[in-house]
Each structure stands twice: as structure tokens, then as C-alpha cells.
Image (cartoon, rainbow, N blue to C red):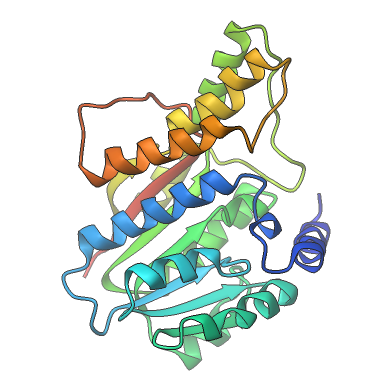
Length: 276
């Protein structure tokens, strides 16, 4: 799809679903795990909530920011999205958290120059399935440059994106059970992990702190095991999806590092640090 068609797609979803989570994802349980993964990343590297600033680019209708603001009420959050419809929806919810400093603005990851002139840089810059909406690797690289430029020295870039290798693992598991391979939606361009890591570290000079395939068990159940049991159908609302989500939240909450669920999740979280 062309970039204007991708933008139209998200505008149409925002018009149709408004504040509902369906504006940004078909999978409510993955949103729970995404917010949990982002919160753990922020908590690990945040010594004090006071004077900490977080920018989310591609914030959609604000579900990540509202979820994080409830966990970190003293952090300053700013959400940017290129869909005016998404930003309009997010602003409708701001009144539910009157004690938190939240703002939402229209902004495009491919050109944050005007925004940078008006505002300071941030302690944390986060994205959640943003870059995959840019339809080429070259554009994704430019998006990464723009994101990195918004970081303070020693600031952290926290990215949740869809990657080819782990998606391939998922499809390999499907094929073992006689299921056909899944393909990304036409408005998504999944990312090559090796190119991604090399570009950020060598071209942007950011330090790789770590990565986490936090939804592996979730995606193995949703896209492999349940479809095998139900004639290929993906069942977003199956009761087991809520069970696996609660299990994973507990595993990460208590740091049960002995639990290993493989790398079948198409969503992977990466942390990079801007060098001082």
C-alpha cells in the first residue's frame, strides 16, 4: 500500500471505532502485554518519576499512554500520531486522568523537525508497531533517525515492532501442524532484525541494551495452537487468551526467568540507549 493509503486506513479505523482498542489492534490481549512490557522497561531504567518525560510516536488513540500514566502518575507524557482522527479520540479521554500531565498532538515520524524546535528532548521515546506502517526499509531508517534525535543524552529508545525472524518461527510452527503460512497485512512492512540492529548501533550510534520476545506464548496459542484445534480460525476472544495473558503478566512481574516460551511472538521489544 502507498503511504497515503496506509494513513487513510488508520483514519477510517479511528472514525469507526473511536476510543475502542479496535482502532489500533484486533487483539485486546496483546495490548495488555504491550503496556506491561513498556512499563517494565520504563521501571527498570527510571530511578525517579519526578521530571521524567516520555514521548510516544504513533500513539494512536492513546491506550499505551493512558495505561502507562496510571502506573507512573508523575511522569510527563506526550503522544504524537499522524492521524488527526486518532489524536481527536485520545484527547477525549484526557479528562479521566486529571492529575497526570498528558498531551496529544498531530505529528509524523518522518518529520519531527518542527516539533523538536518547539520542545525539549525526552528521557524515553517509545513506539508500538509504528515503523511497520512505513512501506520501505529506507523510510523506516528515516523514522529511526527522527526518533533518535528526540532523545536526551543517555535517553532510552523503547521500540515494540513486528519482525521477520520471529514471525517466520511462528509460521514454521504452523506448517508443522499443517496450517498455511500467515502473511502481514498490506499496510504493514515487517522488519529484518539483523538490518535493524546494525543500523541503530552503527549508523545512529545507539547502544543495544536488550530485547524481549514478550508475547511468544501468547502468539503461539493465538496463531498456532487454537487455529489447529478450530479449523484454522484465529480466535481473539477465546477464554484461553485471557488466561495466557494473565500468566505472562505474572511471570514477568515475579521475574521468573527460568520460564522459557521460545521466540514465536511477532512483537519484539528492543531497548537502545543514546550515548552521552
